[in-house]
Length: 176
Image 1 (cartoon, rainbow, N blue to C red):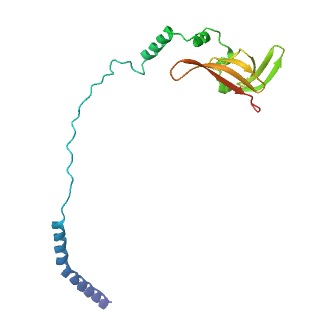
Image 2 (image 1 turned 30 degrees about the vertical axis):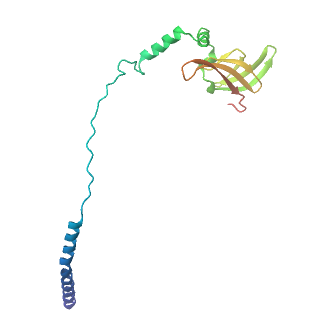
Image 3 (image 1 turned 45 degrees about the vertical axis):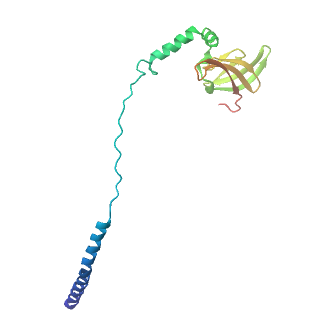
């Protein structure tokens, strides 16, 4: 066992001695490469001068303030929309408290005095006729057919003007 250790130690010393002869040559090569390498660093641009701009909208109406709403109300008062004025001056009907998407047409029937639609709202049945108001957009029933109900609504468009829009409620076969 001692002989094996001794021979391994001798072999290691011989191998290390062989590497030291190339160390000077390696060091000379690394020094030559360092001298030959020229770094190429692009210079940084000078900072641009900041020119402050004056805020000119200080005196304008804040888009989130109540002043803007008051100004829009004054404009409506100067030029009242006859569609909206007529709707606001009449008495509200019970089914105008519910949105149209919460209503379902479950049937229709014909009588001597005209056709009626049967609407289901909050698990209650309501009979409506032509001329009745339903929905939250001033919806007035203009036509009742066997399978659908047509109504005219008064809504605001993207510019804020009040316009008429036609909507329908289709017969729901399996409304619960």
